[in-house]
Image 1 (cartoon, rainbow, N blue to C red):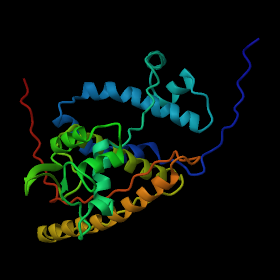
Image 2: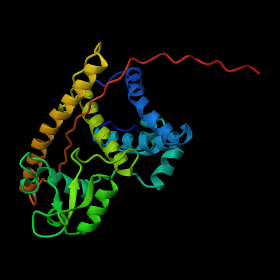
Image 3: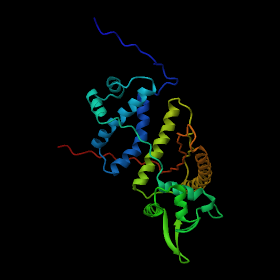
Image 4: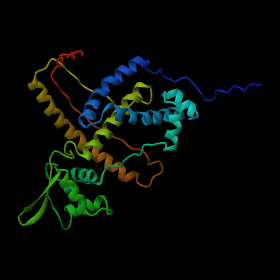
Length: 294
């Protein structure tokens, strides 16, 4: 007698149809373009990228199977991802590669409190220069208000390394001067890469969730073409002013709710709210070079 067929249980058609495969691939290619530019500039070639993609697609395939109530067997993972079963087994033996959510760095938390706490701001609601030592408001008390596990000197050294603060003598007092532009790590730094990955990943999660019919998330933009470089620069300056206003209000509310939610059941959620601005000249056609035939 043959093996009885498996029963299909807990499977239901999605509430919203997914995009057609070819359409989804074309959209992904547009998104991947800037990512590939960054990878190539960093010395990552196709071979290294392909090796990294295999565990990533397996991880996402496993998440999708579990989300839809299916068992994440080797066969199911192979069928959904297109990865050979022997590679699936090797991936399991090497660990499931679950993503670990990284908390915001201590330096970014300290700078966020500096920006928002009225005790550490000037009359124009900007982070004010602080004496390095002494009673509050000082940098020492600012750092200790965020964490007592990391020494204020260590936090200060990291902020100096990132170019976010300067330490100068002001009227005979060692003073920490903040960067007025906010928490913006230098280009190419590990901190900039961490922000890059976290920001774009969460933005993509919101967009993909909306595309697949999940609970709607805010993911909108304003765009225009046919404008001059002067207009593009003026709009860029406007976005920075608007972001400064919105950021201040959002940080205040987020800090208030974070402090209120400490110790409460269900305080496991995280959020991210951001903004971006991009402008460019029209893409110029690149002449195709024909290689000489041997």
